[in-house]
Amino acid sequence: MIVLGLGDVALSLLPLSVALILYGLSVRDWRSIGWATLRMVVQLLTIGFVLTAIFDVDQPLWILLVMLIMSLGAGWIATRPIARLDVLKWPVFVAVFASGSLLLIWIIGVVIRPDPWFRPAIVIPITGMVMANTMNAVSQSAERLWSERAQGNDWAQAVEKSMTAAMIPQINSFMAVGLVSLPGMMTGQILSGVSPLIAVRYQIVIMAMILSTAAIGSYLYLQLQRRLSATEVS
Image (tube, rainbow, N blue to C red; front, side):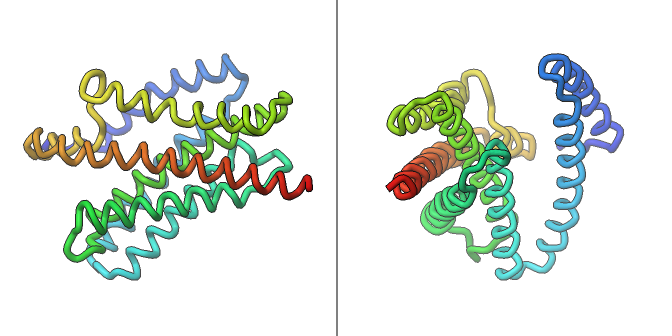
């Protein structure tokens, strides 16, 4: 496995300056990419030290605490597209947490079955993948829902278009995997020396998990928000 030095990592960040310029010229927003990059670096460095400590401790309560923090963080970030709107935010948290938790219980408890169940090297990365993809799907569905409602579309139309928008990236990734792209988990395993055929098995599990949690989370949010809005009107 090739070990990257800090200089190599710094070089990988240079193309972001091009992305920042292009994005800024397009939407007159010179802050978002820079702030997101800073947060990404700081958060990954922090979690690197935290995970090193947690792997050494290897206690279930600490693992559950990390999983809870990741879940709450995903819910909070998912509200970003609707942060300035005068709408309920808590349904986003419920959708992300409930759908993500259900998929984690299934994947960890039924499919992978690590021994012990709280093995951090398995549980925490899977939690991150589940919650991140749930967060993205629910966030997209929330943004599209209120955009459609603002345009005067009724709830049925808004929900249909929001669900479609949320699932486009997930379905595209299914269509492209193995043909256009090699996903991160599979690439990482191959780079670490795992047989490609074994890596493929894990990637199928991850892909199924990602699309499932995206669909469940988006559906749960849209239906919950629709029912809440109907209750408020009545």
